[in-house]
Image (tube, rainbow, N blue to C red; front, side, top):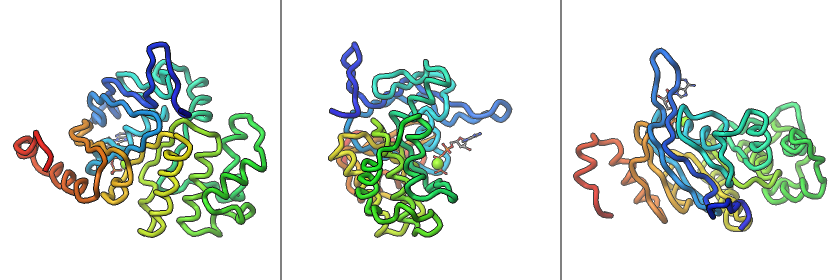
Length: 263
Ligand SMILES: Nc1ncnc2c1ncn2[C@@H]1O[C@H](COP(=O)(O)OP(=O)(O)OP(=O)(O)O)[C@@H](O)[C@H]1O
Ligand SMILES: [Mg+2]
């Protein structure tokens, strides 16, 4: 399958975190991730949920090699990111990882086409016009190559950002609240694109979201509380996700009373 790589020990996880801790700051140190262990299979779609400040963005940043854990290890596509120096880490990020942000993060001075080809050019690869056109067709914007981001709607801008994340053919796409700034209808289009790249291209997608309906489009939901993965749900429905989220808000003692079986 594309997007995974067998290492000598036969691993097929696209992402693996082992005992990852992340402490931000020195004085007033905040433990944003506390002993996180997780394996995400290649070709899977995972949603990450949890209250504000629970460590979701920190989790994504550490898993994507945008930030370094204080301790523990991160493997991506068979490579241990936590052992790489800056240059190799940057190269791996450019070649194997796509990132989509809530605020789109397009460059306003560049055309749609130039925004999409930027990761290729940064990686020293010559953009193939047909391939760029194909990825923009894929997100429904093949006729907007010459537009600037400011001439597009929010949903269109996020679709450009997804095309930019996909253009290098990454193993894993990380998305931090990709639908957070979009209306329900437009959000569905973006979720469809993320799901399609998992189902059709065999890529692995990891998405932070606050929306149970968005999370229900994933294969699996991880719930973070105070920097720890405290719950997870396979083949989620929006109702089940909302129920688990409500439980996360309760005191820990109360949560454990109901642990032990699905409801
Ligand atoms: N660069 C930083 N310096 C210091 N503390 C940080 C930094 N980044 C995050 N934190 C702290 O780490 C904790 C986790 O933050 P994080 O951004 O990962 O939460 P989140 O779950 O993404 O929240 P939200 O839903 O509000 O986006 C918070 O207490 C936050 O204040
Ligand atoms: Mg966040």
